[in-house]
Length: 117
Image (spheres, rainbow, N blue to C red):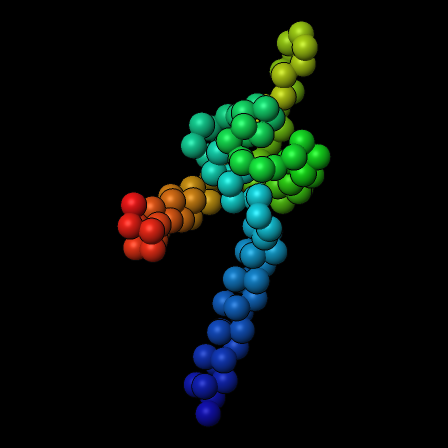
């Protein structure tokens, strides 16, 4: 009986960890935004806007702020005329690179499986 309870508690912790991850990365846009920044190391706002099909300026701004609050990206303001803002992954954000790479590989295989190309 004790063993089952210990396993049950561990499973609850793992499920909570999955939920925490999903809470941070939820929605249609966060993974593609992180993927854009991850692929190029640093991206300007307009570059990310061009990379992520269908996202509006307002939504991109909102999502970038949330990713910054969660310490996944860093906003860098360059002293140029006009001012240039760059985004890059933080050290914490870089821990998502393996997940992004795995999602990319899985997505390519899944598309081939379903669509055939």
